[in-house]
Length: 590
Image (cartoon, rainbow, N blue to C red):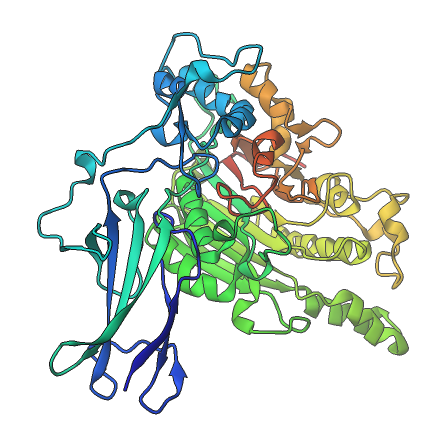
């Protein structure tokens, strides 16, 4: 007869908005084990499985610490209440928790006050470091009217006398806001298909208390251009936004690599929802993602972003080096809003193919195998030509279609192979030059280049050439970079975030400049882990056809270090998102 052997949950912490799917191990009538579901519509040997989810209801509503969401709050910041900061941000699990988080926490007060929510002077820690003046003890929070459930909802009394409110009847359940602070109970039982009676005792499991999804302070768009015409109006209406984001593939998100990140925050079921929320909030017209797994593109990102009006394109990395399940191979995914753009053409760049051509042409036969082992890294680029559906003064005057070319790449090459990294970037740029020669078209080059400012690949991108004396050129065992004079391109590329360095003298401008490297005019970091912090991600644009209107504000390192590094419960990748607003303009003479 069908029976349940074991039930457990993949994550120990349930989070609002993140689906819970228990692992249920069954024994079939023939004594073999399986994890396949046995629904009522397809019983096995006259039996099926019935599932129930319950909220364990109590008189006490538990508040959750805003810094350590897996812990119960014991203190509340009164300063948050005065400045009307969201109440969930006001809770802390201990005095030490609040004190340690103060430098980041005070920013919430200042931002709320700046937005006009409160004009009175902000509360401050006194010189002794005491927090008693702005903290209140959290005693008990009653469920209140917001947690009242319809009378139609099934309730029963548990073995311990607690009230169980039925919240789900399928195997999977997604916690809701009403579940925060409560324990959930999952129940699985074998049922006789004919009599509809339970067979044996139910298998049950209790979760820890449900926590709200951590919500970082929203990142604002900062205007960087005040370009106006002779009448004081913006020069054109053809603006659009572009997001570039390495989302950290699940295959790379191991607990060994990111030991500082709580396991529940590192799980894909949590990260995918948190990443989706973040991406959707940016409302970008074009989204370039890197490290998107093949299965996650098909099963999650393409269908979910389709609901928000995005058309999806994907280029999976090649798998000559990769060993394992091909479904988990990552790649580059580009999405565009259907109401803003239409698809014209797609180009796929496979650097492995370029490596084959290079070795055939340049490398002597005895060295070919060694050369391919060095050059073949499975990296790709996805190039998309789009046509704008919105009005653009520059194009309208000439009666032309407004086209846009967007390149999305991930140059995933180890630090030691400087020649391979530079060769791949040069190969991509030469391909883009050919497109530029065939059509007069603005270009964007987005992605994770795994290269820091002032490196040879960055110099090639930003300056159009590499100094022959650059130290990176010393690493060239195959001679693929010679002569060094060939390491050039004619695209007038400029890094979008360098615009922060050219802003006026406002307080906001100064804040963003402090987060920039003055030597390179690039962000201080776009990648922040325990062992590395630096800039690897860029959005480059052709400065003769596009101008930057605004940029997504950069994060400061201090705010991230409260969780040690990235990824964290708030930010679900080890990279930060880059977002730029561009405006098309009449082409200037090169």
